[in-house]
Amino acid sequence: MTEYGRGSGPEPWHPEDPLYGDSGWSGHEAQQGRMPFGGGPQQQYPQEPHHQQYLQQEQYPGQMQGYPQQSHQQMPVQQPAYDGGGQPWDTAHGGYTGAPQAAQGYPDTGQYPGAAEGYPGTDAYPAGDPYPAPDPYAGADPYAQQPVGGYPGEAPDLYGTPEAYPPPKPPGRRDPEPDAEAEDGEPDEDSPLADSGRDGDDDSREAGSGGGRRAGRSKGKGKGKPKRSGAACLVAALVIAGVVGGGGYYGYTYLKARFGSAEDYAGSGNGESVEVEIPNGATVAQMGSILKEAGVVASTQAFVDAATADKRSTGIQPGTYTLQKKMSSASAIAVLIDPSKLNVLTIPEGKRAVEVYKMIDKKLGKPEGTTAQVAQQQAKNLGLPAWAVSTRKVRDPLEGFLYPTRYDLSKETTPESLLKQMVKNANDKYAALGLEGKAKELGLANPYELVIVASLVQVEGNKHDDFRKMSEVIYNRLKPSNTATNQKIEFDSTINYIKGTSNINVSREETRKIDDPYNTYRYAGLPPGPISNPGDEAVNAALDPDKGGWMFFVSIDGNTTTFTKTFAEHDKLVTEFNERQKKKSGG
Image (cartoon, helix red, strand yellow):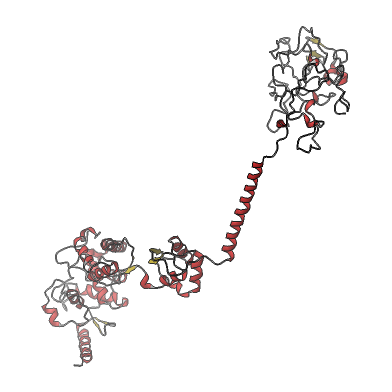
């Protein structure tokens, strides 16, 4: 037996079967005289004045006590209301029913014939009822979700919220799950699934069939269970193959990077030059990353391995190097550890401007004299400070402002750009040391004279330990109270600056004959300008001279300098120095 009233054979249902047509769902025999077939709106009759509150209509008859569980599409039963006195109110006929037990779900056979069989209200109202109850489902989809009631006292809709259970299906759709399928993938026609899930009106009946078979259901295989497409299977296979292939590739890459040798080029490059700057404080791994990005080495790890194998790599200096693309890591290491390959220009302390110009020309591959010409023509545009004195007596306005340090070069470096960088570095250093404020404290006219003192200290002091004593000698000889030299500096270094030489022994005759503002034997006071480019130690010594009262000094052998306070001590040291020079010359 699959349904009430139907046997295992082809015998159709009997029309007099009380279950004929699933009463309460299709609206045929079970609702004669109550539900119009046109689907039009029902005429509404107002309630009695003392019943302004709308009565709750049970949307789910299956939830009432004593009635079988059914879907909310079952024809709703008018629930009796109460007037507060305990008697149920018949909303359809406007009176007391006198049967309160009906509200509790017990059948009233006199008023509701057929209720004893489990289908309440099938003949409750004859066709000629003058007060037909309004049908809330008229003209609506019998299986649509009903809205939640909004009247006081109405029970909540347990199926109207997103998280609620789905509404129950009508009896015609309550088929068990299929336990078997036909060999071709379609459900068996005798299976309960033969009609389920197909388009059409599930509750309509084939007119005149007399057997109760559901009509309007197509048996076409296009409406049944869809077959799997070959294209879908192909796409799925391709996706799986892609996933497996991608995973294998990345797995191979990981294993190669983890256990295989790092990728590296062979040889010393392909001939294409490239400039690479190694920053100060860079680690070996950072160097390798920079070289790899520039196309010099094939991988960072290969460079790290080569640097680890060559202990000389610890001496790699920061700066700009000219290398080639596609070099082996070992070849790149060989270039980086060679200081001569470093594309930098280092200006030593105490170098004169003319010497710096020659160094720039040589390093940049310019004809000799190119940088000197730029310095002479562009001096005012190279960033000199406003307090830098520029007169005709000054041999070179850039002297003292070509800050001695290391400069990284590139293909874009020009003599002008390099000179600007040197002047800027000097300005920054002098500003940081506060030359303008301290010049007057030392009895000098301006910061420019402080730079001149520092340049003299740099050249005459052989060692940094001598710098502060040499600074003391200069300041003492500039004092008006100096009667030993009459405020003359009398430094041999100024004669050498005039001549462009570096002789340790200057004759007395030269000091008297050379008429030049830079000749400190002839002219009192400081020379017109600096005679070198001093470094930090010399500038600091000029700002903080020794307080030992030193007035004279003698360079014994070119490396050792002896300082004295009196002229007698100085004259003795000079005599000893001249005797040593005669012995060296064989006189």
